[in-house]
Length: 334
Image (cartoon, rainbow, N blue to C red; front, side, top):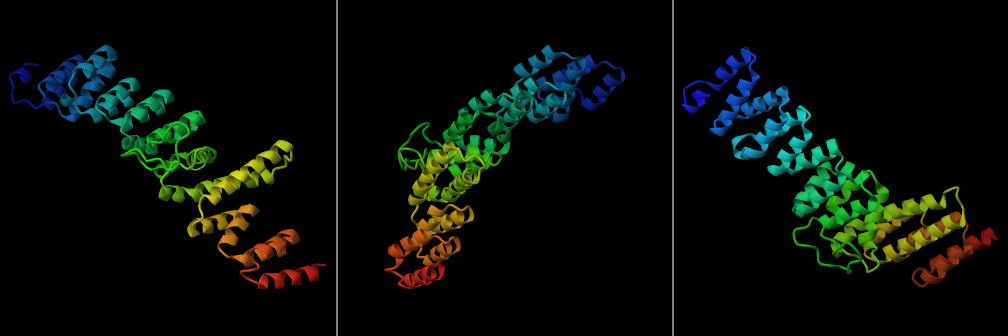
């Protein structure tokens, strides 16, 4: 220790090697601690000091060093790495939080402690952009294991949305990430994504997003809804409850598509509803895009005279050939 106090020109590696040769790890630890106190330590000295403490199983001294030593006197990334390798996950998380290594803190909390509630609280305490970045990097297991209502409220908070209700076209919180930035965290739970997007695009008080962002998200929600509707209608369960659920979902889908009358949105509606067999949405979009022949062909294919006549009544004034086609079909079919 005197070599450090007196500033003698001895390489720390030389001193450490002599102590190790003598198997005096405690002395090595004292020497390395003195290097840190004199602000002479390199990252490898930090690693070696912590390894000494872990080999000595001297938890109290290790904890005291980390609590009382200014972070400027040791390399925090090295400390976290060594502590994790030795199984001292609590201390590693404490160091990460102390030095604002937020990614490491969240990763350790989730991987080692399954501290989902504390992780949510921690993410809520961060700047929204920082919370967004960390959730995208480490949040998928969190989103899978949290109750759906909690995970959705967390994402709403990060996006700066009101927790309940909300007004149509509300102003976004300044500096908050957009909703579509956080859509990837739901990639392993599409039902949860559907519930979340419903809460912002089909809220009782109306859409809670700026128009441009809402229109970007519209096709994603529409596809989720028409897929769910297809699953209900093709299910072997043909109970009254199932039928009622399909009917209600169909109404929600039509409410959604009517909110987006632009040509791009209608093109998405046409394609998705045709793909997943949602007939009302398909007819709605095709008629507004003046794709009348698609409607006629559908009626011919499904031999649906009722819908065929409805198409002619609504669209025949624009394209009189529809009546000619309908009469030809009905006479041939009759």
